[in-house]
Length: 179
Image 1 (cartoon, helix red, strand yellow):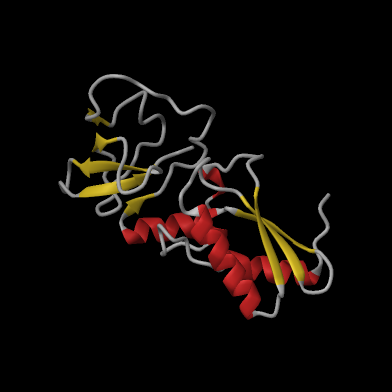
Image 2: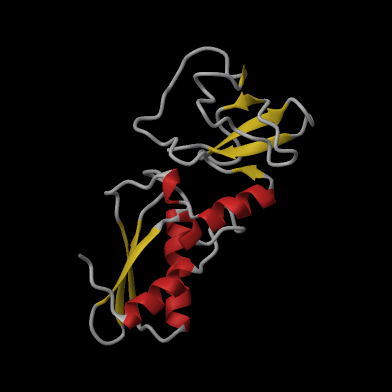
């Protein structure tokens, strides 16, 4: 059992309040990447940060922003440590984070759909949402809510998103892929 002091809980809240550099509509807490804060003596703190995937280019910006926020609140020495295990999963995104993604026009990842290795297929990248891809919970359009969507590209503006289009309202949208 991990014991958290009131100071560590407060610093965790501060570190978690930092906006994600790629999706500023979400905080790092809502994204689920700030794992812990440990007070290491007077004015010294270690923050555990788990990237959404190994080699994520946003880790450096996240680390610098966390350091800045904590220093602004009186912490003299901040160390941000990248922690790869346990690996981050889209199931770590909070309900509030999922709601914000939806409101921002990005289809949030399906809850519980992250169940192991990411499937890689060869062949056309444009497929209609239908079993087995959709599973019991299809990717819904964040604009109209339709489950009738198609995959246009496995990658979008960032590696963690795919580009889809709704077949009902015809609007394109990003889908935060399940990991």
